[in-house]
Image 1: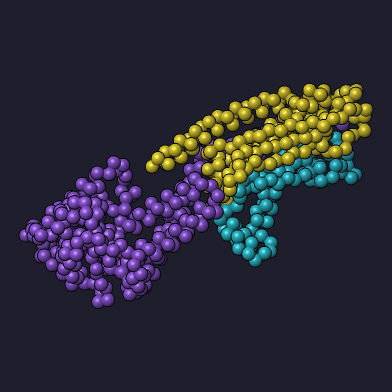
Image 2: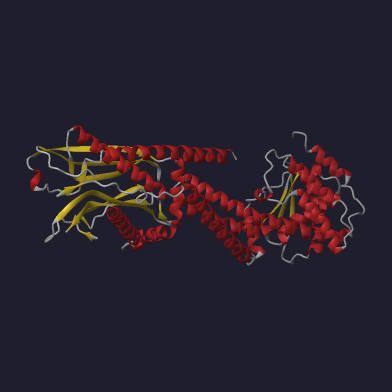
Length: 156
Length: 104
Length: 285
């Protein structure tokens, strides 16, 4: 009986607080993405000729986000039935966008207008116990390009 | 929607670069596939169940990436890359990303 | 060459659906599947277990795994006399043997197990007001054996235990394992209650045939109900191994009415020397 109460309390607090934290985070992400919209992310490696001359440097951003109890339990139920684990999808989405934002912020501090060759790495940090997920880490990195003479470009 | 892993499309010119588009999905296996995989561990061979699972995930990730590209008016995605990561026991995340462009 | 980063709409890579909806759907779905699987497997196990011959049951327990008699042999002999008496009324098969053992312990219970062995604890014997009630307790346990409930329960336990262990093993999450186990147990309890009801009905019929009446039966179930009400937690019926005491009392009245059994009749006392022996054995040895 006591176990059941502890379990329900964990589940409820995980759901309520986790949801709150997630919504706040998403609001912050959307706000900052709007602010940084001028700084473009491009996945290509090749710099177009019209960009020369320019200076480049590597920039990176990373974030570690932890899963809450409710998400973990729902994912556990999912692993019996199979299919999309939507509780983790929002987690990964948040983490990736946050990492990209942090990379852009670093590029902006360096005065760059573009980041080329953007790549991301995702890792899950286990606690060592079988199946116990501690957190997800996303690292985003790329090459920040600062143009010597600014071309005219439409702000997106 | 043209999808390519090249940085450019031979014979076409890019008129607009629309930035990074991404598609990702997290999928889990179910008990049936797990049991078959366990048996295969004894006998060896291709884990067809898991192959199918990851194939479906990849298709879905690419579809989501295309949805993002469509919503911003692109007609091609260049420089597509994939990435798979193990999120928790039994669930993997499939991530596809590329540069959305408008070709003439 | 134009470069821009247009705003990408939300909801493509992450679902905007309320997570609670998915949670309840998954929980309900899994619970229903497990319950259904357990019900089917339990019915199967029940059907097949009766094909194990009674002699095999006796062999299984012959190695001495059951508790030894640690009461008074005179009390055991008295109880065995009652059991042998009831045997004909119960219409049990020829090869079935009933052996009753008396255990000198405070536990207020009696149970039947494999091989036709019945165990009566001093704790319960002390509470019984007369021989009629005692007869009904013994008849109830004998009815369990007649219907092969011990071997059926064991068969079910093995099969369901295996199933639940493999499911919880595959999921990898401790709490999901707990939820799966609890669902399994709650489903099995329903089968337990069915067995109790069946044993009640058979026992009442046997006692009615022997005594010609059912005096003292309601008293027994009232005592059991009082024992039940001492439990501080008081779970609802679907979490119990036995039906509610009140329901069993109602059942007695219904069956008596259907079969025209008399609820009144002569009460026989438990022989005084037996009562004395039982009271004496309470003193520390």
